[in-house]
Image 1 (cartoon, protein in one colour):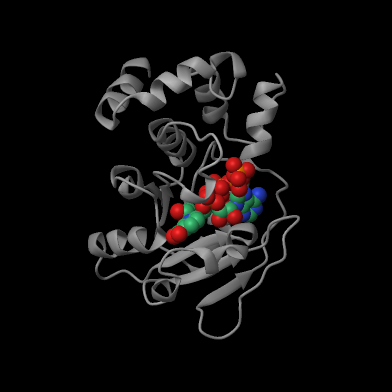
Image 2 (spheres, rainbow, N blue to C red):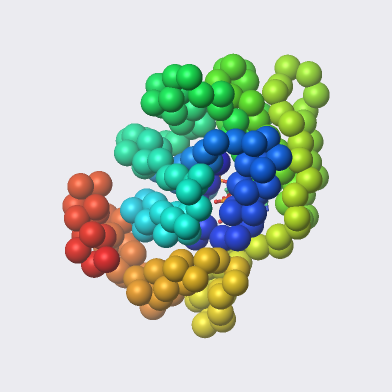
Length: 211
Ligand SMILES: Nc1ncnc2c1ncn2[C@@H]1O[C@H](COP(=O)(O)OP(=O)(O)OP(=O)(O)O)[C@@H](O)[C@H]1O
Ligand SMILES: O=C(O)c1ccc[n+]([C@@H]2O[C@H](COP(=O)([O-])O)[C@@H](O)[C@H]2O)c1
């Protein structure tokens, strides 16, 4: 399951859990984006913070793992690259790519969209406020109804900035990670920009130092 995970929330986790149970998957790999090019105009937290929050959120589930392939690959994140990298690491695995209805609405605008159907089966899950569409022939998309979780990362970020709680919207460890690193607060903006401006290696060291 790919995502910007800024922050990861219970909507993501329920989607992964439901698809894993329905399809009897051995593993769900959460893949935080490196540079989500379709969010280029939006402020995105440093990849290392998003990666670490995803690790914290998934740690208690033995079937959930987190991959660095997208955050370690320089440049914009394309799912075709994600899937090629995962296939190289797991040559015998049958891959499924889980995506919510809103992301699925945009899938025809993704890079190399004609090639992605050969790299994985796509599973589109319901999300409140969005229509679920499989685009008909020439695609490989299964649709799945999951419990409706009206949670978004955008709303979580706004709530933190407004001083509202995000308990029970995100896992407890993620609430604590956000507080510890003062994420999503307008008054911490200068810290974020400073982190954004570091090189990838410096950023990893900086986040590890402050963790
Ligand atoms: N509440 C939800 N229910 C089902 N799928 C979801 C939900 N939230 C996110 N997803 C799906 O998870 C994937 C990653 O989403 P993403 O990390 O962009 O979260 P988001 O909540 O949509 O973030 P933002 O509000 O910042 O755009 C996408 O495929 C998205 O459709
Ligand atoms: O391949 C693309 O061009 C592409 C364009 C937009 C989004 N995606 C992928 O879709 C997933 C959800 O993205 P997002 O931006 O909604 O967090 C994530 O894995 C992205 O890398 C992929």
